[in-house]
Image (tube, rainbow, N blue to C red):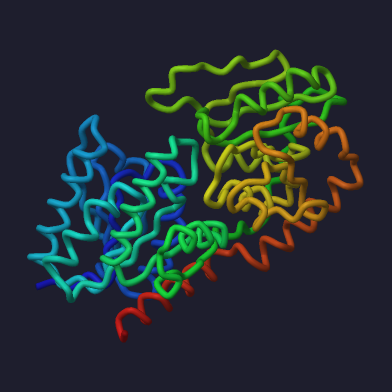
Length: 364
């Protein structure tokens, strides 16, 4: 019987979880050895995850229903439990957590379960009735795992308020790898004389691309913007993109690095956010961040030092923040952001804290 020290399981890896895996898996393979780390992911998303040699990849067939996908994920994991000796099952996000935790703990008490919600499901707009049900379900499911990893203090606060035992919770801030040297390429796509602003993310209600566009529309010739990202499946309302904003679509790491190097600031107008990994990417490049004061973002962006925080849902607040910046403040914020990134958001720190959790639950 083969041994897998850590098996990561996700019903979907689109967005932040794919980045999380790309950053973390190489370090886990280096620490645990080739073949000791595995991932179970949707077959339709396998191309989105470039993993290092030594990671065992298992896939499950996907359908249009997330519930069906969670069921398919559970079947693959059950099969792996029969044919492999698994040390820790690291489960990512709500649907995977709901399908796997009670099932695995009921069938095998030996397997240690770590659950990371990557943002609680109730920390977003929903009816009071739905929120109460969601909280109740998560509170009950918390009994079927050995440790819950929260990606911010904000996420831990929500969990404790929901009645989840703080003894089961560890806060591990997300981290990313450093780059040898930031890009020095100056993009020629920016107009001269206008404030150069960048948005990176999905075009959905959460990420607030509509707020970014409305702010840029009102700023008119005083600012120009680039939208990096695209619409998500099922998003019915299309963005009204003003003339001073260019839609670049999804970009590779090199192209995005060039934009980080040439922009004046990254704007994150999210309506809710468990963490906000894109903020750390900008700070790594020495780029100031203008972000909504929601979720985990205030734990990344220090108002007035590494960027600015503004009242969420409000384009006028964002406009005021943009207009308050001058060249000197942008330079100082960029430098301070880079130092804060080096201090708090390197993936090596994230990796070590997670490895410590695996060891803790193994010996508990």
